Structure formats: C-alpha cells, structure tokens
Length: 197
Image 1: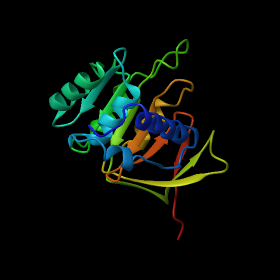
Image 2: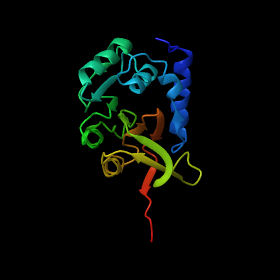
Image 3: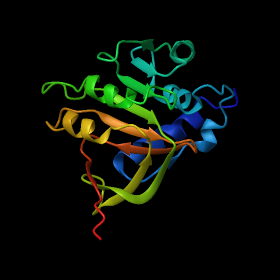
Image 4: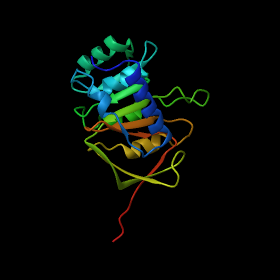
C-alpha cells in the first residue's frame, strides 16, 4: 500500500477536523484516497484507517457489505456490529435507496448523560458542490454556507428529526465520487433554499 499510515493519515485527520469545525467547507481527500490500492470502498477504507481501532464498532450498507466489512476488520481490528450499536456507519452508493434514511433513523444518538455515545454516518453520493440548494447555519459558520448534495436518498427530514433534541443526535458526512467530503455536525442547522419566482 502506498498510503503512509502515519503522515497521510495525520493529514486526513486534520482535514476531517477542519471539515467538522467549518461545516460547508469541502475537504479534498482525493490525493490520499488515490494511494489506496484496493478499489473497493476506497474513501471508506481511508476513513477507517484514520478513525478506527479495536475499540470501534461499525456497520456497512452496501451490496458488498461482507467483503468490505472483512477488509476493514483485517486492517483496523474494528468490529462489525448491528446498526443500533455501531459507532460509525458507512452507506455506500450501491446500497438500497432507503439505506441512508434508515441508517439515520436507527443509529444511536447518545444519551443526556453521554451525548458523545452516538454514531457518525458517512454516506457516498454522486456530487457535492457549493451551490444554493441547502443553506447551512450554526457553529463554525460565519453567517451561512450554501451546499448541494447530489443524491436520490431522502435524508434531510430524517436528520432533522434525529437531531431535534440537542445535544443528542448524529453527525453526518457526505463524500462524493471526487473524494470531496462535507461534514454536517449535529449543531448545523439546514434549511432548503426556496426559489421565489
């Protein structure tokens, strides 16, 4: 593997932290993802290398779930788990159309005593751009950010329900086919931009 498991992974981690701190700002993971020789779920392997260890549980939604889960476990020692128990959830592009909505609905969202005991969901989508479909506001955003997430999945309403009782909720990240990552922490407020004619 060409990926440097120290320096490249540190770079990816910094990019993830920056993306979480500045919702709406895209993080480019293409350089690091290209260093992974396995073609299956390349960006998700990169994220697993960065975030997983033997204490972590995860769930994969994909037609290749078994193979990808085995690969992640072999590299990281993280354990596959039921969605309700998973610390991280990966929803790949080839998953069922309703997989993302179901993942958000069933993911653990923490407790008032331990709000951090919640899931982070990563979903693969066709494209993410800084155009004006969705308006983001909240911590880390000076006034507002505009983004567009190109996917057939119905996820926004389910996210709003899941995150309505802050500090409970899930953090959601999208990654597109160009390996651009968008972080939407539970503190980010999202509204659909209405076009008035």
